[in-house]
Image (cartoon, rainbow, N blue to C red; front, side, top):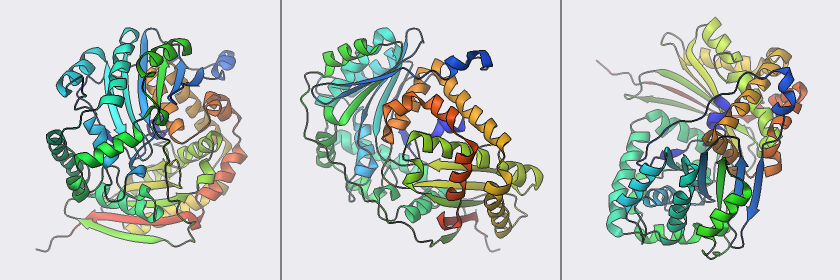
Length: 466
């Protein structure tokens, strides 16, 4: 389920609380012509804003007694001060160290006992805390989140302790993996020249080390207020039930100061491209990344995003894609090849084509073959048959989530993060259904234009002299 897995959490560092993680939900039977009306029925999404500015969003689903509930704060690494990149992620960690009313160990124990799954993540534009539980335990989670919104306890010793945890996380996720540490960061810095989107969400080692309690407290006081947050429900719950519960626990929390989110929007690229030759003793395979800039105008609403998702799915979305069939199956140049569409809320996105190729092949040969296929894609290789198949695949993926509260929450959250209108999200199935072959073809011609190709990175093992 390529589309659903990454429509939301683009390059996110997950911080999993010490809870039991259990997947839920079952897939529906194959859709038939007789179920077309139900298949295109809009999602049951409603929203209401409380007097203190806290928004309540409900996706009512016919899943008995299981609810995914979470609270999102409109703050991420894109909002971090440039001298303390990673403070949003650091604050997320500290939210599990307890409040004035509940110590950290007791908090983790409660989350473990009452939830099938609890998690939290920080992205470029949002921090989200999510729980999957039986309906009878929703109140417990809301009470905890309201307490954390208002009464977080930040102790200096806890900050120092957690700092070491985050540093180890950074080393594990980045320093130990040179492809993450160098390749993805190089691509991001090439496309996002001045924006905070060019920085790693987790931050840099020296800035993590210098982060202190006062900086985290200031970040918490500014962004963790009701008027900069929303509570999202997915499952067996009505809007009336949800509002009553949220009012009960969050209604007395006063509105904070209005939050102004500042973003540096990078200039339009003029066609300059970069090539990086990356070698390391830590690398054991030969790989190539080719990155394209994706202008915000190409995904400024749900329909345009879905057009791109269909296009990327046909081009590089798995073993049935055009690139995989040619590069891996037919020409046997690579072991794998895939495309990842990374979209951001305020600035341009990235289409990253990555392949791990065979040791006896040369990088320039692989590059020439891949770019040749990409250039031929719109006019020669993109067919109506491939388009219809990929569009149906996307529809089926959305349909499957209608029995999966956690999956539906992630889907809706992905669109909320990008600022899309709830009415558009509600009608996503009919929007996808109406997408035409010509619309995808036109988007492809813009997407893979050579002027948008900004970066290529060749990674390979470092040769050791005898």
